[in-house]
Image 1 (cartoon, rainbow, N blue to C red):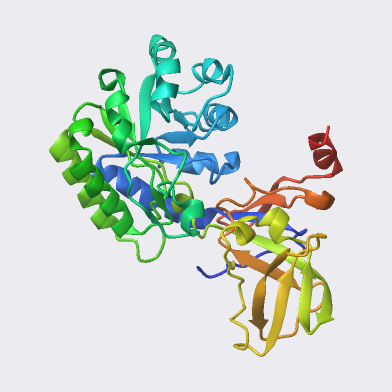
Image 2 (image 1 turned 60 degrees about the vertical axis):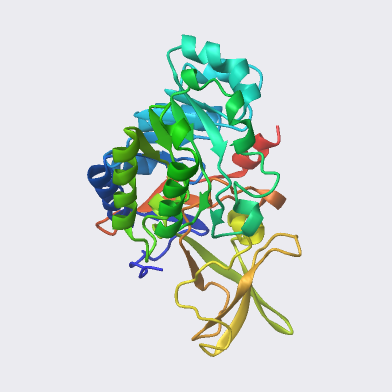
Length: 381
């Protein structure tokens, strides 16, 4: 976790804060990857969809990739470059609308591609098919985050590839990674070259999906660049990557305040933020998010359980230690809180949604969006 920059006093909490300096640094990695590997890099908006950041990201990326109609429309209207879209299945009328939005549309199965192929071709769109190559390298969450787990709904399996109309398909798509370092990225590229080479030669491009954690410490970007260049040289196709979290890892924070410190065998700090509403991956993965100025229990002298304010018993973030005993009004800052945070949050119990804000490079603080009762009530009809 990077060092926490100075944050202004008086921040209204809770608040998600995007660190523009950290984001710009991450974008230099993406720009280098595009330049040296000669590949296209897309933002997966399922992980991060914050239009206030798009002017910086647009310079380093080729466009966005979506998991459905609304994400695709957001990419078209606010990012303004290539729009790719994939879903395991499309609902009635969804493809009709997507064909006015997306440049590239990916299908999941022989049945879906048979249903929509001619319509998409007639609209002049490039056609992709998602393949399940049986290569598992999800380093987070086990089967929950492994697209190649047994009985996965993602992608046409190897034994059904012969059912696909390869003469009509432009892009072979395979997404098998999750928070993977370079060994996963390179391993996937080499696996596709070995197991799917005959099919690669029938398409214009191969999309190796997301999960490439290119900005995580320890990721060998040179190894990925070399693997992409070798793949392109062997097959003569374009290469596309669509990281989400890998582009914005360690670029932001969730700032919260202690409301009360409750005692039940241990100190329990009740925060104005919540695992179940504002950090759902804490419970889904599960994982323990980093907190600035904290240590493992027993390390710093004052142990405390950090918990949310909802009525769900399991709304517990984790146990930490601090140099000083927490008290009401203290600030608690969680790190790496841009990926899959506000895009997945909810207002269970009427819990207010955090502000969306940015910390500019000059240290100034700007609230992009503040949510209120109307947002909660409007969702309920």
